[in-house]
Structure formats: C-alpha cells, structure tokens
Image 1 (tube, rainbow, N blue to C red):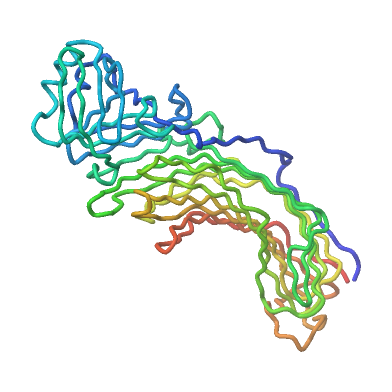
Image 2: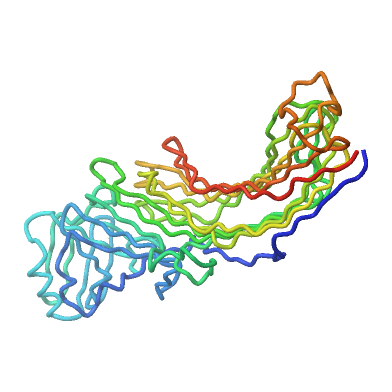
Length: 452
C-alpha cells in the first residue's frame, strides 16, 4: 500500500510551559490578620478561634491555609495578645508572663478560676511546640502571681480532636476563582506543575501482534488549587467539601501503531509518570495530598494489518473545574478551549481504528484528624485523536476476522477512507462515591479518501 498522509493545523502551539509549585514543607503558624495584637479584648476566651498557616510571615495569599475552629470550651490564642511577654512550658504547665498590669488584670478577670474549662493555644515561637506547630493545652488550674504579672496553668496536652466541635478549613481561598481567563501564577492558590518527556523509539504498548512506538513525546501541566471543607467532629462527618482547580496543560505526542494481525477492540495504557507535590499538613488537624497523573493510551482494533502514525500537539490554557465532593450536581467545568495541531501517516490500512489519547488528572486526597476521616477525588481531562479506517468490503484485508467496525457505504472504491476527529472530555470523581462527565466535545478533523 502506498504512503498517504494529511496535515490539519488548528493553531500554532507554544513549545514550552513555565510553572512553579509551592513547597508546603515549611508551612507554619502565622497570626490571622483579623487579630489586632494591641487589643486587650483578645485576652477574653472565646469558643471561636481562627488559626492561619503560611510559608512566610507576610501571609502570602497564594499559600494561605486558614483553620477556623469552634471549640467545645473557651479558648485563648496566646499569639494574638501583644502584651504577652513570655510563654514557657513544662510537661504539665504553661507559664505566661504579661508585660503590663492592665493585661494581667484583664486575664485575671476574664479567665475561669475554679475549673478546667479553658484551652490555651501556643505556637512554635515559644519553647512549647515542635517547629511549625501550635500546641493545645487544657488548663486544670490557674495560679496567679501579682508581683511578676505571671500566671501558671497546670495543663494536660490536648489536640484538635479533643477540643473541637467543628472545624472549617480554607486553602488559599482569597478572591474569586479565575473562571474566564488564562491561568496566572500570581493568583491565590496552591500552585503545582510537572513535565515529562518520552524518548524516541520507546515501545509503550506491546501485545502479541501489536506494538505502539513513540516518535516523540513531551507532556507539561500546571494547576492552581483552592478549596474549603467543614467538618463536624462529634459525628465524624463532612458538612461540605469543594475544590476549584484551574488547569493548563501542553502535550506533543507522536505514536506509530504496527498491527500485524486482526485484533479485537482493545485498550492500552502507559503511565509516563506521577508527580507528588508537597503535602499540605496542619499537624493534628488535616493533611491534603495533591497528585498529578499522566496516562498515554490508545483504543485500537482492526480486521487486518495496520501501520499508522498519529501525531497531535495540544494546548489548553483555561481549564477551570469546580468539584463538590458531597453533591456531584454542583460540580461544573468552564473554559477548556483546546488548540491543536494534528497529522497522520498511513502505510497500511484495514477496516478498524487506531485512536491515541492523553489523560491528565489532578487528584486530591484529604485526611482529617489524623485518619479519623479520609476521602480522595479529582478532575481528569482526556483529549483523544480518533482515527477510523473504512475499506470497501471487497478490499477487506482479512475476510474471516470478526469486524469491529463494519464498512459503511464509503465512496473510496479504489482505496480507503480515513475519518479523524478530536474527542475531548473533562470528568470529576470522588473515589467510591461518584464520577461525572463535566464537559465533552467532538471536533471533526478530516474525512478523506486515499488510493491503494
């Protein structure tokens, strides 16, 4: 069979992607801006406490994590009190020294005297806690020293699970998600990115009578993640959980399919790599583990030999998905406008199909209260280059094989018809709960006849 080819171009594509990701290994307590440390009112215990975490002391919104807790007893956030001069701890005490008599007297007035209905929260700036952590202590007694403006609390170490009725957590959720424009990395959000290359000549699919070989391949992605969840501690139930994912990815892939015998419809997949950005972890409260996954796959089946190369270059700059873990009907996708260039080269054909695809996923695994509750979900996009070969019945290469795609009334009486289309879908899922297609489109590329 003679050499045939065509080329269809929808856009000129960028060759590279530049991205960055946050390293959340250095996440540490930062005082929420809602607290004015000059206000003596912060001395008064409250059951509502806001705990912020960031990568530096400037409270960069791109890396902000906010934990709002509803405590089961009144709580004092010591770092919010500017007149606390010193905090020191032993295994069963927390000693607080005030810098003014007014602050000492306010604490003497506001803090309970005769019972243990008080929590004290320290942070990593004192000698009470590990680096990057806050400490929670339940006071069982308070001893006041007027001459030194000091109070010593006899304490029992507590944690988020024991002191919290409910917890509300936001991940970089400052400002509105960018639903209409291209992604920029100065937006609030957890930034992640990865890239992979596939070496020329690498066999990624292999079967008895079939191989799929890479001619070239490079894959790059970037994503900005924001989210929020509400968790009820006594019932161990999520009340809400959602994420907004802004994604961009670039794919440049060429594969040669060599089928030497009839093959029933089959699916082949190859995983070129999985990228694990740093875990977002507030010790004792929750951890969030993002994962970026790539899959290169193909659907193939034919009644006879096929030697065919598919080449596709793809760019998506504006993918936006909202994933509501508890209510799939509230999940949706906007943007996802693909720009693509494609070409094929076919040396031998039989009635059938050879359709490569790329699957890119952003997965998020949430664990609450050190494993009391866990859930995993994400968003996945799948562009596929669909190629269907149709030969007149008299020219079917293997007449005795089961046909997967029956010949249509094609007009290519002295050749074969090649139909190509771009099939693109975006789906969201929560493992063991639900999976849903958020967006789907099919773009015809070509329907041409080639002579034998």
